[in-house]
Length: 119
Image (tube, rainbow, N blue to C red; front, side, top):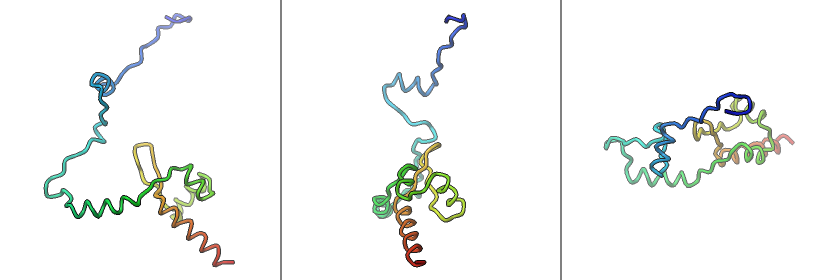
């Protein structure tokens, strides 16, 4: 009991956390576990090579970096996204998004070109 004579509850530990603690290994929650594809849908070696070539060029930027590159604030960025005039973010997880660096660079170049052509 504490000073106010209110019993304190012990923090509960989920089954997943308990299993992780007991095994000494970390495991991904079920929704992130890799699923086995049927043999007919498995990517060929050429597909894997092609996708790795394009994935090598992908770099993600989080919101603070996007704000720094563009000079825009959070409200402006999401307003432009709503108006389809700014690249939409990619979902990385349940509570995380990021923007593709090449798309942000392309947007910035287009803004510079638009600004120069008007003047």
